[in-house]
Length: 273
Length: 266
Ligand SMILES: Nc1ncnc2c1ncn2[C@@H]1O[C@H](COP(=O)(O)OP(=O)(O)O)[C@@H](O)[C@H]1O
Ligand SMILES: [Mg+2]
Image (cartoon, rainbow over all chains, first blue to last red; front, side, top):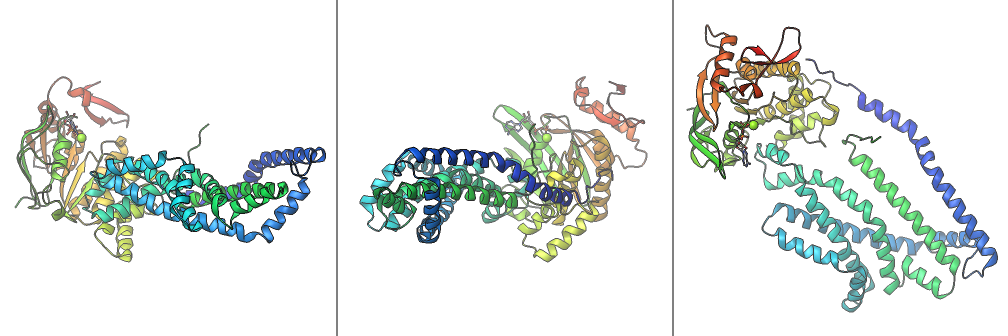
């Protein structure tokens, strides 16, 4: 036997990774910190020369942020819950539609046309339509988010299945699997990276859509709280919410990154120089 | 009854006639090699035997079943490996070997036991937890062969399974697989464009000319058969000056691979 087995190579790489991870993060974070410091500096200086409804001081924004995260936490949690429910639903339905398109040829052109038409309807139209169709604000928000997000998953999952190597299908077919086994053992693991990638690219967009939907018609949630603050000329509160949303987006991106690293650990790491 | 029966089989793709009136049998426990140049229609014949393609005319039977019309009847009976390893990247070597057993509904503990035994038998000890991208080409092909054998099929079908590897790796893998298949008494159909693959492994060699039909039959293991003269007569049967294009690749004494065409070093 001439092939050498790289015993323990994987473990060694894991160990090396965690050791250098902290310094990598610091190095990657440093430019971000510089940018944040400059933005805060400019805001502070601007606040000295303008009324507080144009540019409040950094400390008053900080104070407002503190109040949001303590007294107004229910707004944050409500918004996150709405986002989580709608995203879960959209992932399930979108993935199912994508799989049906990928696995059942005759239905595919009809379903794909439907999804593409949906994808072409502006988010604003859905928001206005939802106001006419539904009274309950929770259902409105859920509806708006679902119809906006589902096409992303449906189309990406369908494309993922189309990109499934024919070689694999043929090789697995020699074992004579059932259709369910093909789905469960081949298609599902194959589309997971595509689902994660889609989530990463639309999570920020989805968050903005919940907030818009809340602004239009909800009593609680970040969007409605921002609407109230704007009505009361509380610029520091509006900016505090904005800061919080930026932070939330960073947290989402990090979280998805960690999930990807865990779920996709089988992938070789490509280094492009 | 023959394990594999191919009778007057013809197949064409639009204007291209790929297989023309092909007939042969493989008996139980026999290792048969189909040899032919690239484009001779070997893979087309192979696909009809494994049930991926329907013959235009003629009869194909594998273990007595029509592999295309009655595809599910071959569940658990055939193990197939290809030129490329076709491993699933999200499964470890062990997970890939277990794949067929999973489809057949073998319980997890039993699967693991059998996969570990196959890792050992295919000389992959210690590689069980590695993912395909962490393995060399030769090791990946071993995993692919182990995946085909793990379900304990009575018939093993190999389409150019040793052809893409370097010569030394290909030779050791061939020897290991040949010994294993013989020990286990598997019926084996091996398809290759490399004469040395066939001469080394097969009980019987069928030489195909395009569009795939048998032009010569040889028994490299019969008494008095000389591998060298057999090699030359197969080269003649494959025929044509451009036989050298595909050539028969052999490793020279010094271990340096060279292209040997019709006795001349090119
Ligand atoms: N799917 C296909 N569509 C059209 N032509 C094909 C297809 N597969 C094979 N062929 C043609 O059939 C002939 C035989 O191909 P193949 O069976 O792959 O040969 P081999 O495996 O011996 O190299 C070739 O001329 C090839 O171009
Ligand atoms: Mg071929």
